[in-house]
Length: 299
Image (cartoon, rainbow, N blue to C red; front, side):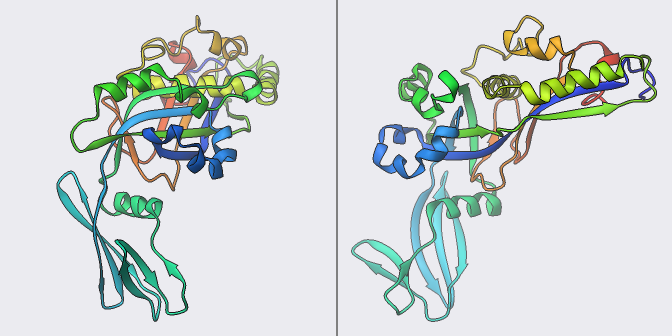
C-alpha cells in the first residue's frame, strides 16, 4: 500500500478546538452576563450558528434520597436523577427550587451540567450547524463575539426564525494555540532522495504557522466538512491551489490538512444536513488529487 506513494516524507497540518463557550444567540448583547467569561471569549475566533431543541424545565421532586428533575424536549419528558447528600432536602420557595443541607447552604444542579447529562443520557440535545465563521482582526484582537454583534447572516437566520420547538444558539471555539504537524516516514516510497529537505519544510511549517493562518484554515476545513446551509465560500472550493490561505501549505508541499472538533464537555451533539450527529468530528482534506500523494486519510 505504501510502495505506490511518491515521497518518503509527507506532512499534514493538524488543528483542533481547545475550548469553547456555549450561549444562546440572544445573549450576545448581555455584556453583564458575559463579563465573567471575557477571558475565554477573547480567545475564541471561530463561531458556529445553529438550531438546538428547546429544553423546558417542568418539575423537581425528591424521591427518597434522589433528586428528580423533569424536562420536556420536543414534546417528550425526560428525567434526570441526582443522588442527594445525607441530610439534604429539596425545597420550593418563592417559585424557586433549591436543595438545602440544614446548615443554611443552598445548591442545585446548574444548567450546563443538566444539558450535558440530558444529552449523554438520552442523546436529545443536537446542534444543527447552519453557519460557520471566524474573526481575528489585528493580532487576534477581534473575537468571534465581536463579529457576531453585527453579523448579517446571524440576523438573517434569526429573522427567518427557528423551527418549532428549537432556538438559535452559538458555539464559540478556541483553536489550539500550538502548531501540530503529522508526519509519515515511508521507506517504500518512490522518491527517497528529498527526505531531508522535506523534513526541513515540515519543521519550518511547525514553527512558523501563525495563529491567524490556523484560524482561517480551521474555519475553511470545517465549512467544507459540515457544508452548512448559509455558508457559500469554501463549501465546494476547499482545498484548492488558488486559495490564499493554503498557499504556504502548497509552497511547502504538504500532503493534507485536518481540523478536529472533539470536546468532552460540550453539552450538544453537532450535525448538519451533510454530517450525521456524532460527538467527534474530523475534517480531513487531502491537498492533492494524485493518489500517490494521499497517504493520511485515504489509506
